[in-house]
Length: 206
Image 1: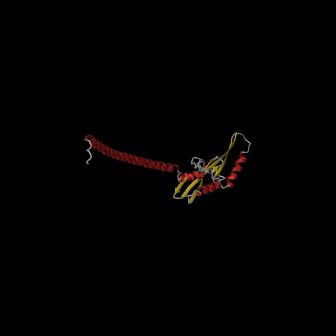
Image 2: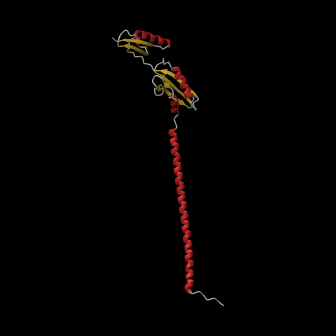
Image 3: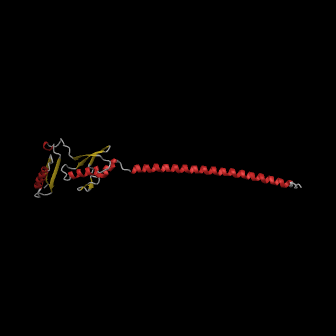
C-alpha cells in the first residue's frame, strides 16, 4: 500500500531547510577562507616587520661596533700612554712627546721628542716605547726616532751666542750663595754627558 504523501507545507519547509543549510555552509567556507587569508597576510606582515627590525638592529649593532673599535693609531697611542714621565707626572702622550706617527700596513713609525737631549731616562723611554708598540698583535715592525726640542738660533743675538741651542740661567737674590760654583758644576755635567752647544749663563742679582 502506498504511503501517503507529505503535506505541501512540510515539503516546502524541508526544501527551505536544505537551502538554508547549504547557504550556511557556503558562508562558513567563505568566512573560513577570509580568516585564513587575513591570518596569512598578518603573518607575512609580522614576519616582514621582524625581518626589517632584525636587519636594522644588526646594522645598528655593526655601526656601534665599528665606532667602539679603536683605530690602529688609537691602539698605538693607548700602548704608549702607559709610559709615564716621572718629572711631569703624566704619560708621554699627554706630554706631547709622540710625534710623526705613521702606520703603513702592519708597520709603525713615530718619534719621541723629549724636552732636552740630556734627558736622563731617554734610553728607558726608547726601550719602553719599542716594547709597548711591538706587543700589539698586528704590528710587524716598529721604527722609533728619538729627538729633542731645541731653540732655533737667533741671528740678532751676539756672535758668541748665535750657535747656542740651550741656555741654563743661574740666579739668586743675593750674593755669596754659590752661583759661580753651581754654574761650573752644571757646565762640567753637560760636557760629561756629551751635550753639544750648551752655555751656562750666570745672572748675578744684587
